[in-house]
Amino acid sequence: MYKAVNISENTYKKLHKIATQSHTPKARIIESLVKEYCMTMNKREKIKLEKFNKEMGAKVKALKFSKKIKVNTDNIDADFAVLADTDYIM
Image (cartoon, rainbow, N blue to C red; front, top):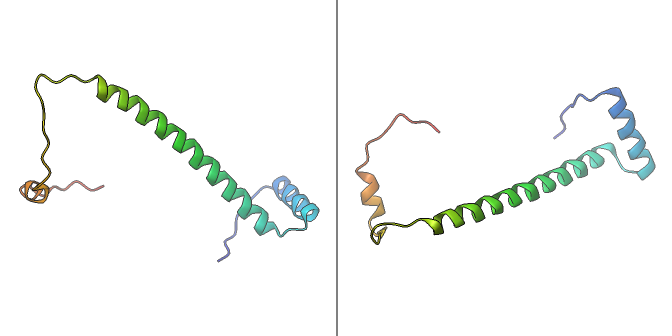
């Protein structure tokens, strides 16, 4: 599926020059640029998530409770079934 994209004349000239020099269609150049950018974004997000998890893990380990707490998830469906419906929309 092809979609029109508006870019500046200068950007188009640069894209045309890259495509001509590499003997590659402009669409393939754009696809590879978008793919590379997405991979870079995912790497940055992964690094941020790892940093967040590390910080939260340290905070969780630092918590001290006055007594031992046990969470039971055996009947989690029944426990949540008693909750009332809300108008909250995600």
